[in-house]
Image (cartoon, rainbow, N blue to C red; front, side, top):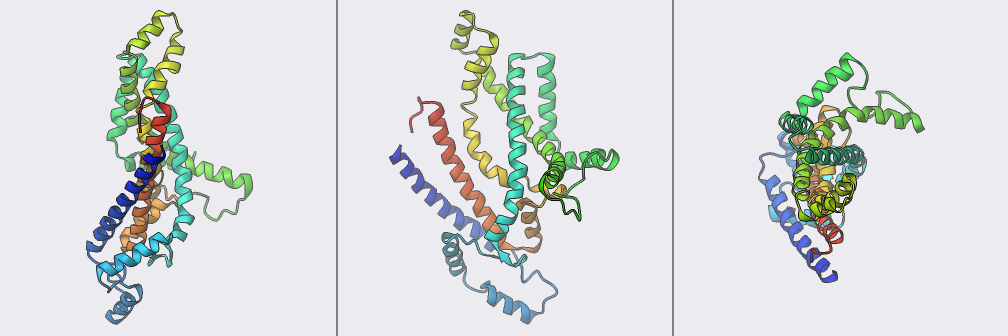
Length: 317
């Protein structure tokens, strides 16, 4: 195990080094920057700012400076927000995490339950309705579902707030603040759950169909075990093994999978900040966030490999 972890850590370093070079090169090749895109500045002021921010230096020198800062836990300085990128992450990323972790929990819970029942009742009316829902959820754009729910539940029925994290001008504290945040979370969480349940349910249904046809399931039935015990103690446990590989991709997805949703519902998360940075070409923040997602991706992949080995001792690292 120790030698495997050492090899994986070495691979992670190499992958992140290559990712950092690719990320920097991608944004460096994009036309314009924060200074040149500001039409209110004179040519002299633009040249001065480019000198201050180091935008006029050679690309290799700029890459070396950025990497040196990243190795010290500093991803640069946001030109638009006038704050360090790490400070902005700390301010916004937890809001995104709160939204994503709740929606991920409900997505997996609903997908597992529906996937198991649908596989057990294959070709039934329930299974047919589930498949229709799956393809509908995968084909309808997220912004359409979000705007539709805002129109119906927030504007027409006035059951829920249309957006934001708290009510405008609110000074609520304690339990009142928590309830206010929960009320504003309902709509974006519902949309994110609907979008995730479709593909994940199809995945669990397919795995369950493969497992319940195995010989050991027939043997368990021949021994007279209850169907509930067979499904949830034997079949489901083995059907969930391939899903462990998805866990590693959930980690970066917690922060990068809700960009459009946060924009639609005006949720003050890192996704909305990322979208705003594109408009003003705030490349330091964009590079820092992209590198942050790359780090989470390689860490998540390592975690999924280790969990797979723990769940199934037959797998050798």
